[in-house]
Length: 267
Ligand SMILES: [Zn+2]
Ligand SMILES: [Zn+2]
Image (tube, rainbow, N blue to C red):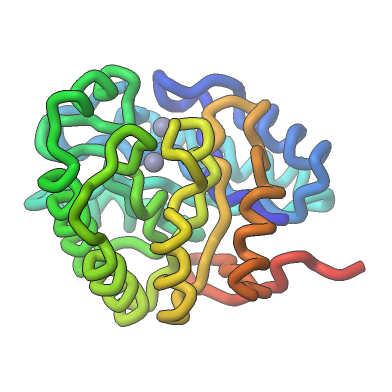
């Protein structure tokens, strides 16, 4: 299997050297991995959320040297996870084009000042209205997709928590988002961190995934590991979910070109 969402100690909220992730992946029998450290924030740089700009060349170099050292045992891709901040598209584009990334995951972690994916942002869930937050999240997500800056939509419904359930239907949001992903030639990520972040299931929700699959959107799989122990975490759940939808191939990337490979390589 392939894990395209690995972090590490380049950001303040991750731990473990990247090499430890490679060793964990080899140990778990993964055929391919991709590092996707948080791209430096283009607004209010914050080393807890993401490495600072000066560290980006060292990140690229570290992944390159791991490719050299472990390339015969496992495929290692140079990816990055970029936040989308409206109005800062050019700065984001400049950072992304400065290095030969294999893929770029585009993700929403902030709604205004609310960093909902962070530990500090958890308390605010109690003060927010899901019927207002979900549409706002999906609107921003579609703006992100429309920019054409990114290859993969990271944890597509990251706003979701088991205790934060809208009463309005989300079918329209799911459909409009899936159509746009397809139109833009992007992929969507199946991210097992939903299980660890109290979303009640992997991201995206079963109903959302069914719309993505029906729309023909290619998928990648990621654990969103922020420590070596989480590499390939809960991939059996992701696999059985994908099999229920008859998904047989997943997307892989090289220098931002996509191809599809069998979900479970034979032999
Ligand atoms: Zn992170
Ligand atoms: Zn993320």
